[in-house]
Image (cartoon, rainbow, N blue to C red; front, side):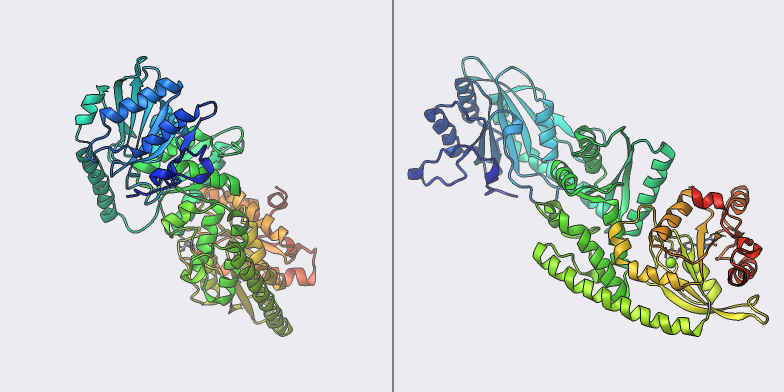
Length: 592
Ligand SMILES: Nc1nc2c(ncn2[C@@H]2O[C@H](COP(=O)(O)OP(=O)(O)OP(=O)(O)O)[C@@H](O)[C@H]2O)c(=O)[nH]1
Ligand SMILES: [Mg+2]
């Protein structure tokens, strides 16, 4: 537990040091000091010499010194006391004027090791601010002492954080008591009991849970419609699971406008901190890209690790990157994302020391030093150039061979790799995880309907897409994806069993357009074995597409026949009837 923490220098006010007493710079009085007399500030500074027996929450003596000073200066006075009973911070004003030392240790499972005692000049109990501060900073306790007009202490109000196992409450407030009673209270024992209960909760969860990070998800609906926002949030949950995390809680906030500073507003953030505490989560994941300033603000207000959707996607890519090419591309994307976000950020990140959002490809940790990042980006960019050069050479030799190339593209988890395996008799990785494939793989296959006797074709399996694909990734993977320009056909694989098929189809079309890919595109509806028959029929009509099940193999012969027709069609008569063949995407689908 911290016991020699210095208050942050930035929030300090007039020094009231006494060099003869060997006072150090911790003897600064913080808060609203303007207009106070030198003697008053000095007496405030003298509070640093006070001691409280470790087992007591507060002594009558110290309480009286606080109330006398408060009445004298007409403002509240607060002190922070550590576990050894020493006064480590003195401040003038409300609880919120008391600077707290930087947090240390895990945010959710332990107390801070500091208690706050402060004076209310009016006979009021603990304020909302007092309690929020208690909870957000995991203070050992917060004590408010009423000051009587004669300067003597009146009643005391004490509150402590509720153990996480109490699902309802964030704090427990004792009935008001006299300061003498407070002094007699075995505070040390109460603290021990509370910390034990907190630790027990954590241990119990450790046993029942894997090492997966537990996340609270935050979606925002601001005009796009509830269904759309819900489906995005579900997708975010899928992303978090693919990154190896567990979703502890999901919340959808409806706001007409996003809050510029915190996206969802302070009140909502506090609610989520409470949720995270009770659900034993230490991670907040936002379904939006957060600006560097927003991420910093939210992190400092919640003391939780804060990630946005892009970081989760980048993390999955980092975990799945196999082979030098993919690793270089992913690391480059991560560093580009990170660079503008470095300043002042990442306290919670480094404190929690790992997990989603901190991993680089190949189990390395991400760099956190700006200059080293710049150097590294330069190195990686050179590597990407070399890679794309090598790729274009291989491509040339392949084009010379003039074997038709069919590239499978589509939304992540649509079943591209499974279909690729079925068509090319290959064994590419197919998993029920997002972004299982990062490196394009090419294999030979045979199309019986092509030409007079059937012919060889090459199939390419590619990285999956997702709506709002992070720009950093599009750029990093540009070289890989540009290769798709050499394909004779882009086979757009669609998961017909998923929700929101048209939105996903559009998202993929948009990315293909943005990459300037020219080869003709054809849609194939996959997972016909699990898709709703009526929905499937509608989609077949809409996209004029063949339906298959890559898993069971049904429909594959039709698909091959259609592929052969498509490959032959446009070559002979680019605008002929074959071009609008069996599964040409309906114009309506493209123009949406
Ligand atoms: N029921 C059913 N499941 C399928 C079918 N095709 C693929 N899947 C499953 O869908 C999941 C994703 O398949 P993949 O082939 O890895 O998908 P992908 O499009 O390559 O995904 P990424 O590489 O992550 O973009 C796996 O669990 C597959 O077993 C199908 O026709 N029917
Ligand atoms: Mg795949």
